[in-house]
Figure 1 (cartoon, rainbow, N blue to C red):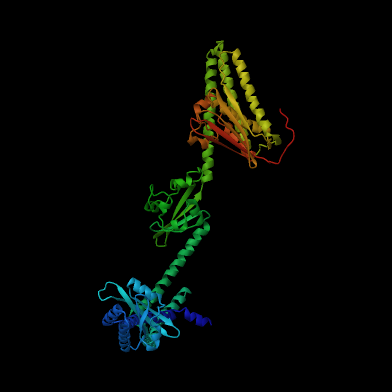
Figure 2: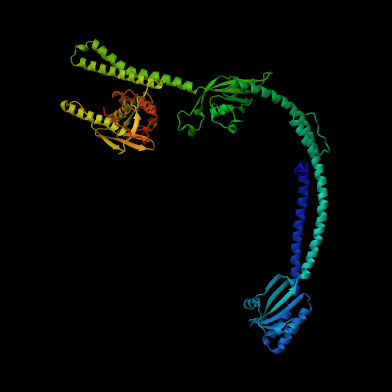
Length: 633
């Protein structure tokens, strides 16, 4: 069974079947066209033979115009003479314009004369003055042809009647059927002869192809010893000779490829990072998955591409220069990544250390290059952050230390004797010292958070009352500053108003009250600092799905769009001169972010320059928690 199915799938069977099908389709198309034309021609000749002649129409027209008994006898004689010359005509009727039968072909149908015709088509032909013909099949009569010819008056002024003719077409279709049978018999004989010829031709073509297939199978299995027989010098013979030459060349190429594969496998086995291999022209031939991930390339994009292009270094060095001096280099993937890939992610780029080595044969010929990529992004980031941190701390401490040094020098130079200046100098020195102490304390707090040594003392509190308690403190501070300003005319107090929009539902949240107070204090102090005199600070407390949202909005100058992502960085200030003048350390928002993240929450800011800023804090909570009593402290 399998052998029979295999034969059906063989090219020998397909070629023979194709020849046979082409022959059959050709014969059938020609036969169908021939039979169709024959049928049309025979039907046309038949219609001409049974159509009413002009002289008959003229005689009947004259007789119908007279319309008396003598003329009716003439009509019968006329149509009987016409029918006598054509044996295929089975019935003829002459009908006047009123639809009355006035003459018939057969005498045994004389009783129909004087009756109204029952054929609607006769009336339609008379009324429309149009000849109507049709061919139909009846079980008792067989195939028949009908024609209804309107008869006009001698002066062609009107229609005076019609002639109905019915003729049998059995002789026409019998002749056509006989010709079809003869044609089918000839087609069958031609098909059999064509099939024999097709099988012979297909075997002559497929025999050398089958031998070449067997040789290809042996070559695939590693046996290159066989040779294909050449039957003739035609195209198949040339193909057989090419297969024999190919067998020799593939054997040589396989040995070379196996040697190269072992060498490449050895290199890849020893590498744990990204590995790229090229040919001597710099086109990539091998790239591992890690290298594709580093470079954000697919295998199709990488294979065949130039090494310097895919590494993004073509503007700085050519492949020939790499061959001459394969020195390691640092590559940043942001240099050749699309802007869309890194637009929304500042950390999306990688820093790679690329080591190059040449692939040389024993003869010294350079056949390519291997590039090994090491990801040093984290190391570079740590080094950069360390340098940035040391630079920021040094910069932040230098200003107060320089100020303290200047005032101490002034005091040593005799300013301590001045009763007005000495207290001012000492006050400035104390303020700068306090500022440095606060900065160092903040740095220690951040260090403890980074090392995971800062613990949270959580308790379940009513956040509505907790938030109100903090805002009440700021209201009390404003009242106290205003009272002090009345006693001291020189003291300037910034006026502001705190607007509260709280949900009416009590929100019970588990937090470290001291640390969360520090977060809200930091944001409120910033809102007060940067709000204009008389501004409104809007504080909202809302509930979402398993989270509470705290927002604090001011009406200040806002934050430029380019600085929004950096406001939570350590020592980062939007307006450095103004922030330092107001005593900020640049660490408050960094500490706030660390505290909120310790609570499994999130903090972010929305701002537009000139439209104020809104800081948001999202904290998780259980909507079903009702809590207990929360004592104000």
